[in-house]
Image 1 (cartoon, rainbow, N blue to C red):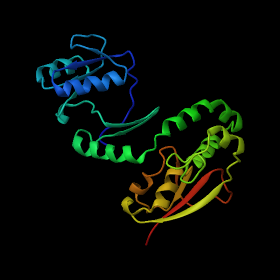
Image 2: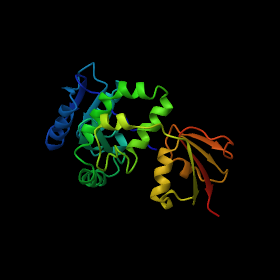
Image 3: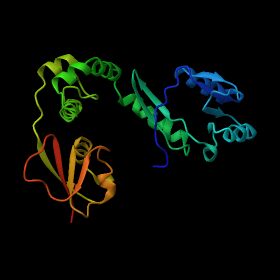
Image 4: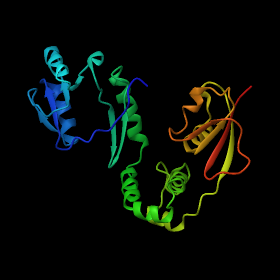
Length: 247
């Protein structure tokens, strides 16, 4: 990755905006939506700045240790601003590191048509059920597996399909039994089937042959355990994958 995506909470925080014109107006609207307090270059309490067409201001701000976004100048940017899809508390950001704002915008438009309006309500329902989820599954791993299964394609809380209220799912939810799946994959992650990609995204742990390409393992959840070696004799909770390289 050339950048680490993060979501910054800007409500009430100072952000410097330098410049005028349409580009500045667009950035001002974006900062207003995020709740930022927009200030001038001299503000001492700002850690972030957005600059339009002012190289001298960029140099001054960087000298103060302020992180700067320079509109249409990716080589000068300490951070970039993604294209955003918003569904209540659900935010999807698409970035290219400033390489092509047009590409990011085109992907955002596709996502706007694809992501249902009810995503925000689903997120709110899960937040409201947090204590009930902890009571139902005190173990964090069991809780994550149950939520993952419910949100999986075709599950009762499938975010891209028809869902039932979170409370109804929670009342009927059962303990998720451990299971093992096998994947036989090529070296190119673009050749993964939809099933392969889904299993990698859901797996709690991955046992793999030593010649499996790292690019394949990178498609798994960041917190999934990766073990270069055979499956254990005893079944483990959640989803375990055995991944081997296609000959």
